Image 1 (cartoon, rainbow, N blue to C red):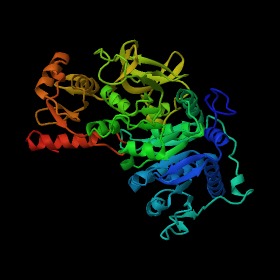
Image 2: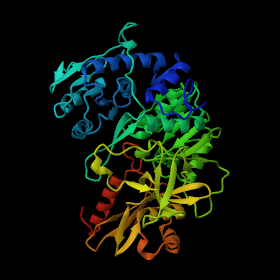
Image 3: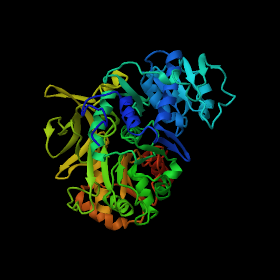
Image 4: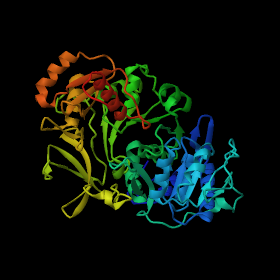
Length: 542
């Protein structure tokens, strides 16, 4: 399909809900959303979203951000669309997060309303008492009744109950207010270095640029069925939702447990497009849970969020032999994904310059990039990746957090990703974080370089970090996944590649990687485990 679908202006910035309208026009009676055995057609989804948008607009503060407190329920997806229809930025919230964090997000974003799933009612009652929210929209769906414990008003906020769409000419006739592509479509909150959530406002134009660059690559069609593994608080969820909706395809929601059995759900849902983190695929590989051809229905597999090992890509492709596999990269600030690389089993990535990971490729159409040397000057080989273009956000919700994140060069403003990459004939290879630099015995060490060396010499996933110990800072590392490596032989290979001060003092193996809520390797848990190991050895204390 052409980018944007019927009626679209190719390459032009548009409102995000206009991309949903493309899908609605292409497939009005087809499924837009599926959760287990319940599906919502495009027409139903549109009508419910307009009903909720009308209710929020009538009772809330015009234009104020709308929080969507839901996880893997209809409200999480239809609520997102309803906020856009209301002419307001959407602010996804996960009910599994602590109330204090969600309240901090509500305050920081200035939310005027909350669309809450019925099963999140318990948190709503506590949440709005500590945040200045004017209205809570607690929808009833055809299979769920609003819990009685949510009263008509909590914490000074008015509670509305919105049900199925009204009669024609009523709320379903609601028309989104006029807006511009420069308006904010959604605000996502990432972890801040100060401990406070960091708000990333993403405009309609930013997402439009991503969709225009991506849709023709994926050739989305109405019969496609997209997996939806990520929580909506994670920007990679948008890589499932809006490309699917723009093409008239169906978003098929998977719980964390369901995502660990992709072969079953590829068959049950008829999935054609899969998207997850490499850690999820790596875990399946370690347990050898994917038989050859078991994902034969997939025509497209997409991985993002962390380095993808070549042997994991090969293992996945063996299970999905009829499809293509893309590795994409992008921080939230550059809108979902800003580079892409299509991996093929016949590609020769054996050159040690490329390493054991699949490259992240080249910039999306419209995006420009350069590499910076440690002194901040442009560099052709290896350096920090900085980018500019229509997918780049304008700045953090708190302008004070912009400090050090942007570069002015050649009369333009560039975003500093903080990621180190190496240029190769296959595009860039990700080397790790620039800000993961530590000092070991006075030497500066890039942890990403150590991890890359460990991956390349072992073929396994690797995590390294520095820990304070009584004898001084120590570099430690984990190798994750079976089979158990020969650490003595590995140490010899590492010594041929890294100087002595960059060699991990401790190297541990774990058969399985702990995963966080986003399906990435949980570095916090590994760090806690390492502290405990050193503490037991009498070399450090927690």
